[in-house]
Image (cartoon, rainbow, N blue to C red):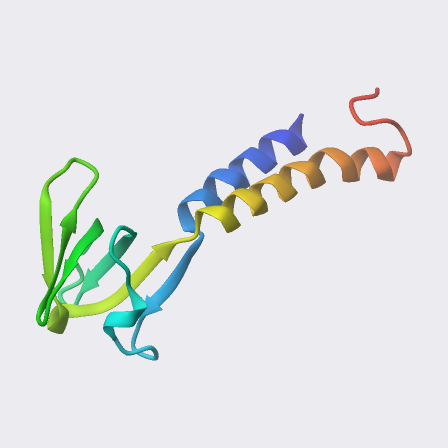
Length: 116
């Protein structure tokens, strides 16, 4: 039971933290790094964060809608970092962790999964 609780806790952490950094100080911004219809976390130079689905990319701004449906935009010159959620990798990683938490203890004790 401890292992299951531990793996569920790790799963929640991974669900909140598995992102890919698209733009940073080492990866300068370019329009081909983001796509319409995808959700990104935009961090501005002043430290604020905006999460929205990109709908329009023009010469100076990126515009989209957040989860509540509000229109949001950010100036390209104000972007310090952009993160993209990697849902497929997160789900796979969580599945592997849960499977490992169930199978490894049973394998090490040489008893069937769920056995006592």
